[in-house]
Length: 412
Image (cartoon, rainbow, N blue to C red):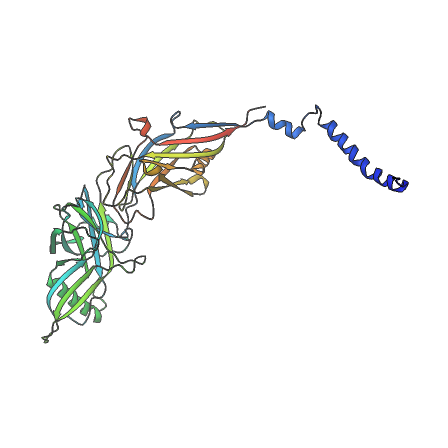
């Protein structure tokens, strides 16, 4: 077959560049040095290292702190005494009528709705408390210090309870007889205040429930809040007759605001303590001064080990989640929050990513404090006390551990 001259020239023009390109590629692949950028990679390999508090000192100590929770802090109400704790309740009633100053009070009963949480001897479930009137004003900003101030409560009680509350799937309410004269005085005062704006009612219509030492348990009671609007309130059921009437009527006084306060045992020394419902947390002092300078952080893991013997738990499961905060005052008071988890339900709690804390420390003084805290969403529904081994524990394996993965570049 003959190929026309013009067609042959066209094929030649098309294939010559491909032949030339293949020759160039084959020549460049033979014993040529790597490009400058690529060659430098092999000569400048990054050194990755791991360092931990097992090999160098990173923790200088720990201390307990408290936020002294306000009356608004707890989601449930706690009442009773057990294991060195004492929990009390304040309630102020808001629907006291102004039209019954002359009514005859036949009976008055305080009504509380127990919940299933219990701390202490939940077998006997003995709870004993007195009811007192309140002599001084208090607000949602009140703290345990407000409750303990001299003269805050009346000397004489207006009611008492001593009994057992069995744990059941459906918890029946309990009732306490309280002074009829107390309710009568509220009705009279409310009527006076209606027509006289100078009448002081700031400390009126309130009662305190204070446990006795005979209690063996602290129980949770329902509290009506914005987040739990369907919970029953603390109530007083009043049976009365209007002046000149033979008809017996019943009315329910409902609390407008409730508060709960808990005192706790003295904190253990050299421990990391989280106290649910009381606002206790721990400061963990950290120093990274012994770390190399100019390093890049790739990972950091903080580990705490639970002291099961010192930990106090109610009848709920042990919490598997805790949290922490690191405040870097030299970096605009930036708050960094971290979450720790129990590893497979064990007593070892791990914060898997605390890189931000380590980096902040290295950028500044290399020393700082981590606040170890209960998990925010659950610390208001229990009084459980979690205790972790501290940095000065006699057993090095139980101390807090910080493991850091970092890299450096070797000098040329």
